[in-house]
Length: 461
Image 1: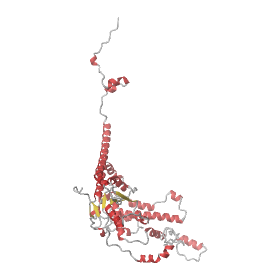
Image 2: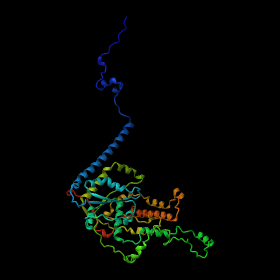
Image 3: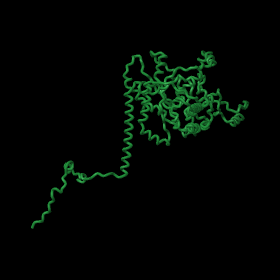
Image 4: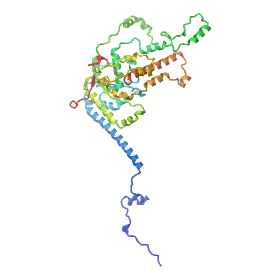
């Protein structure tokens, strides 16, 4: 007797694989993978992918827009690079001034801002530029003598044509802090005569007369009473007293050569008696382009840094517009301030005073009016801890390496002290000039001699 046969299912009820499932069914892939239906991820995954996608999209959009802005302005001025020049004609050269932001250890940050946002437009227009970056306050005036001693390269241009080329080239100033340095140096250059004694020699004489390396008075009494030279009069100080003629800082003070003193002695006497005449008028100066620059330092500005990270297109727009304004060359007269800042009183104060006391005693000026108030609202981002850092740099204790390896000779000790004191005074002078509320130096002779680049109108563009 045969077994009963199983009932056969109708062929219409079985699902027929089709498409990729019919082809891949023989590869060993489970059929459940083809029958799995997609579903929404969990709430946490939705939040994660939503935030990640939004941040990525915002970053990509911002960078693409910034590149489009740079390319747009580069194409707008590219026709200038195709102009033909004579064999002896030089391209236009712009001088770029930048300096270190107060409180920032990176002295090249403002120059990086120029290279990233302004330089591509100038390169597209074939405009040459010269970078002048100050690492610290007074860096370039101290190196003026070395640069002047370089033999100039012979050229076919006369000094008058060279001056005209500098005026036509223009000057770009990055940030308000650089504007303070520029106007301060411009005023000193046209209002003060040449000094017979430089600042390094004056500092060396001050350090030689402060008596830091003098022996104590009690020790001198004991040595004078017990020594063989008891007949010498007691003066209260050591025989190697640190005075203006002391040999302690003689290696620092620059002494004139003996041969030159014999030949040019009468000439130096006549020059020292004559006071250099200060000109009543200054020659025309190159036009200025004021480029806004902001540097955020500190933990409290982290939200602002995050916003600026996704706002690259704004800085690209400002830099491209500034470069386009400089290339077009439309100028106007510099608007003078309503009242000038008396910065002479800042340097007339004693450097021996504590910097924290100077921060309270030094006045804080408000708006001066005119183009001098350029970027005055950005002074609130200048750190207020710069004065305390300068005071702490002078009062710090010696490090372990300095205690274990002191200077072996007195000459090296005085040289090390001179270098540290000179650097400290330069930082203090820079803080006085660049601090918030110090104002911008000004002279009445600058009126009608300075010009500022202005954006071209739509018709002239």
